[in-house]
Length: 177
Length: 228
Image 1 (cartoon, each protein chain N blue to C red):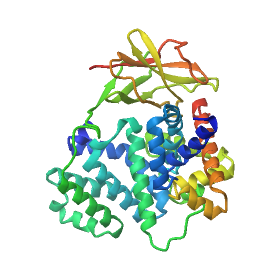
Image 2 (tube, rainbow over the protein chains, first blue to last red):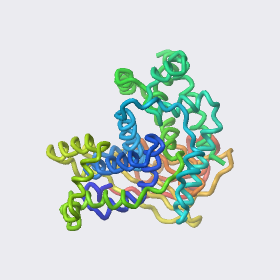
Image 3 (cartoon, helix red, strand yellow):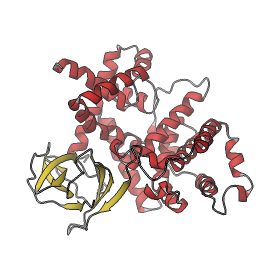
């Protein structure tokens, strides 16, 4: 990050090569369309180029910070798409069948394996917990919007979010395999 | 504060990390966090579960034109040849794409207002420190910003469920416990060091029983000496 803060384009290129694939994948998952995912990714990386030095180390890793920016931009783009119906289901397997990245390098193969592993952890959660987590994180809905959509009390939605996240965190501490 | 009140805040904390709170609720929670160390610690514990969510999506290949478009704009912004203007107005074409126009206008406004470069948001520089490679092949590096940092370790073995990796801050001959973390299938692991780096000599990693330890129960696998 210091080199990016020094406005070094070569350092930024390395930074994009390291995180661009994950960023584009996340943007696509949220906005569900190639052109919009490209725009979101470009917008997010340009904002990082402009303000990379504002990275706050206390809030996590560079990658988590980067993907957080991409997530927020993608949710904004989703909300700007007038008349779009709320996305209530997320079919990862369909995305993989249609769009999966070729594993041309060892790094891509590792990235794919890690994401498969993490999706496995999410799948292990009870459906009611997984659904509220995905609606909040990938759908950009607040807990009160989710409660209205699913016809549940607010407390139930928040409780399910917490239970699901605690289970994921515990699985992480145990190791995924 | 009663245990029941803490439980209610923890429900809010999980929703907050997922971006699921309304702005007023988030502001109320931030005020509580400023006063409650227990909740801050619980938030730091839970945060990695949210940070892996974006990594769980199907991994796709970004189109090559995205990279070239981005780097054109970056080089132009840095005043290097080969930027967008030299290639016939790619910035203009990018600005005319409706999904990005709004954000671009905001960025240009930010550019006019001036950049905050070279330091973190609180005015603290970020530095990367790397430790020597261990006999096991493990290597660690620490991105430090003031009193906190993020430890990235590679070459880690998968541990049985009864064990976990733990980060430690070494200070004056004592080891202070920090975050627990697991190795991903790639052999890489990440641990937040939320505080305690000021005045410390090194950050180290050990293998500990599930749940972590108050004192190390094994020799450090890797360590990163701190300078300054």
